[in-house]
Length: 197
Image (cartoon, rainbow, N blue to C red; front, side):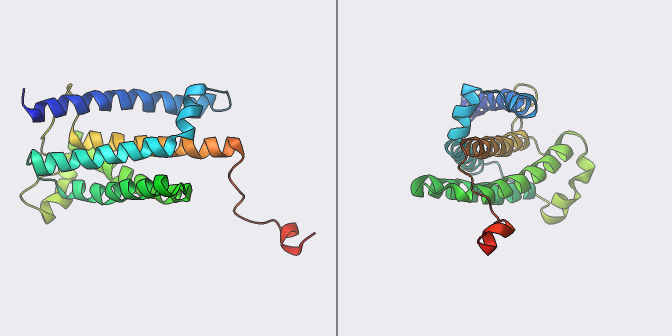
């Protein structure tokens, strides 16, 4: 087994576990958020650390595929990298400085990257005819070229979508955890606060 095959299988296992977690987290957020849950409370309190871990893994994984495995990234992959790489840096600084106000910016980056990833997965799995954006800008690298195909469905675009979704979930759980602890301050003052009454 080559190192690339080993890496693919390892990452694919992580993606499956991440997708199971995403499913459970969405169920929790939609139906059970008001009930106490030790696991999700722990994840929420440490959401920034978990989001940092995902962004670091995604950054290193994408660099492994392009620099070591020699998989040339398509234009949509590059755009997704533009939104993923700063997250690793911003979350790293947030952890070092213990200042987590940056999470709103990271959530914005993740959401934009997530939308691009949804589009990429759509053309990859369902409608390669919408691939004209990539074909116009780069004739050499197709946005629908299959470099990785593990467990019958896991591809590089799906890995990206899973990473962005995980970061969004971790940061939402973090924000909810802060709200539940009462540590989020109101962003606006009431009219009574302004006039001092």
